[in-house]
Every structure is written in structure tokens, then in C-alpha cells.
Length: 237
Image (cartoon, rainbow, N blue to C red; front, side):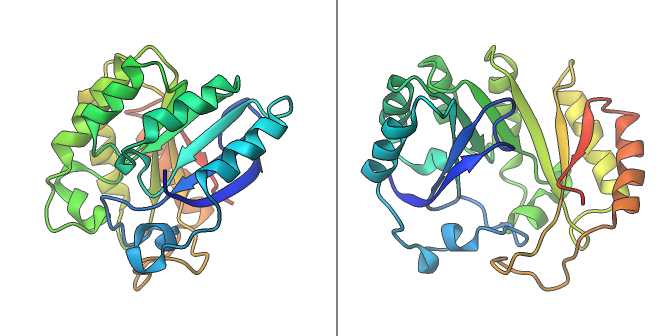
């Protein structure tokens, strides 16, 4: 598996677990607000460590860690991801998978093999604006994301939705449209986290993008919660 980064400890990214984060290389999207440009763009790909390095660390710390977050980029691009997750679980560690929802069949395969214990799917925008948020020329990803949502809804594991909210990409009205779309997809709301945009210097296309203020985010949240009571803010400070 192509490892693009490794964070040895997180108390935030895997709910209720002490975990580490493995970042994989490559992505099927080119979201202009993505803060992991070094992972997404081939020219930025580096080799900070190998899969073996990570597994060695996990083995040494398996009595202190409870889980591993596998994120990207888009982890489902990795053809040997199932074999890697088997090795992680063999160490007694739980797996959280982050995905953009563009590979529903691969996601279903992992779930059928019980290789994922918790999942998070990034929902980029309302369906008629999905291309603007993914950096792709159209909204072709929408049916794939819808299928991934249905796969997770029937998987029997805990999971969450999340959306990075960006001024220049989203508006209050478009996020309300997104909430209506989710409402049509899922009869029972799952946690949906609105995350504040953060420019940490590795953004794919930062021009014209900025964060909403905390007051604006709270106003957006109040409107969204009318349709999706399980919505909440994350990283909004």
C-alpha cells in the first residue's frame, strides 16, 4: 500500500478511541479546498514511510492504541487495502475508514469482509453542485456517492457524514439543499459534521476560498438542523 503520511497519535479522529492515522496516496477527486494536496497531486507524492514501517510501529504500540484511521487521498484507490486492513485487525486494532464515496463496490467488499469497524464519508455538496466541490467537470460522482451512502446504511457499523464548509464553494442555501438530499437518501439521520475550511498552506486551489465565521457557521447549522437534527459543527474554532 502506498503510504503518504503517518500520524502516530490522535484522540479526535476515531470517536472514543486512541488511534493513529495512516494517509494513503492518490485521490479520485480534485477538490479545490483540499488541504492534503501533497497526497492528492502526483507531483507531490513522497515516501515518508512504508507499509512495513507503519505495521512495525502498530505492533510495538498495540497495547496502547485502540484503532487505526485510514484516510487519504482516497484509500479505496489502493488495490492491496484489504490485505493491509487484515494485518491491522490481526494486531487487535479497530479500523476506521475515511472515503469520498466514489468506489461503492470496493467499500461494500471491505464491509462484507468485516474489515471496517467505523466509517466516515465526505459529502462534498448538493448534487447539482457536486462538480464544483470535487474539481471534476460534472456531477458524475453523485450516483456513486448515493450508492456508497446506501452501502453504509445497510452495513450494521457506526458511521458518519461530514462536509467541509467553504466560503466560495458553499452557501447557506446550498447546504440546506444538501440536507434535503441527505434526507431523501436516509430515513434515519446519522451524525453529520460540518467542518470549517482551514488553509494550512497545502490547498489545491485556494484562490477565492475562505472560512465562514463561527457566527455564520452557527447560523448555517441552525438552518440545517431543521432538516437534519443529527448535524453538528466540528473544527469550527
